[in-house]
Length: 418
Image (cartoon, rainbow, N blue to C red; front, top):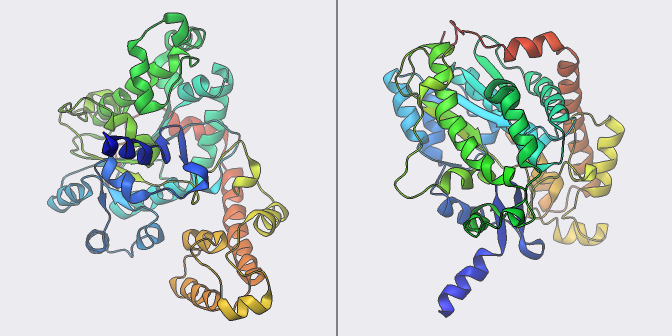
């Protein structure tokens, strides 16, 4: 009994579900525990070396530095690729804000690398229905945000001849589904008085005050990626055998919460214009978490993240004012003891976005030894982030509504595996 209570208390120290990532009392997220909980494996150097060998390209910085740190059956995808079998990439975005922050961009930057490296097609799902139900947005506003977010995604440089973007409201449901969502937002669990419905709290963290649309979305999401996507791809792209799904660990409870023994297959029948055959299609989903030591970046707190709409002045102010430093409280102590790199946010950001491995190692060595000051590290980070944001802003400016329509058009992609 005592052991069970201790295990439950330990489990409550961090909350990880599809909509929340937090650690108790400001503690760190235990990623090793997440790997075990969700049945993942560490993405080790052997797999990274194999990716380099198969693609003849250097591993992406996110692979080299463990930004993408875990996988489920990625080795099987590489086995299939080595045999000459086809697979596709799958990822998505829940459009809840006007613009993306850098945490949102991380999985798309990595997806772009995978598409280029393996020369495979990609499906991107915009869950505007989910955000309509969770963020108290109207159907129309959710759809508008989906298109705005699509512009940021397209600006990452995806190949239109290999990429299909869809929104749930437009592609999946139509007018009938939109009205279903509107109605579901008007009824809560308490009004239904469904005792059994409370069983979902353990997996998704719902309460009696939540509306029934929230409990209906997880099975819809599972079905969408398992059935809808594969059918669509089969008709758009012809025969294929694998899917690479790019998501975050916060999405894993949806699929991990299925009953034991229930497999979620990949049915090509969901995308008739992509994959006309009836063969199953393998899918690869890269996993990243857009958060710091203690929790997820928040779109509701503008100071918790760097947005792609931030000016150079905004970036400088956020880094200098809000990026927690591991440096000492005085120059004298800093020279003597050096910086604590484990808690230093600027160094962590540089490990994500500074591509030069030699320069990053130099910063870590000099800063950790106290020979480099906090101001110097923050100055370099400001330069790196400003360059990334300004480059993205230029690319997004070039994305027109017509381009969004083209990426979201239901169409065959005859050259997607070329």
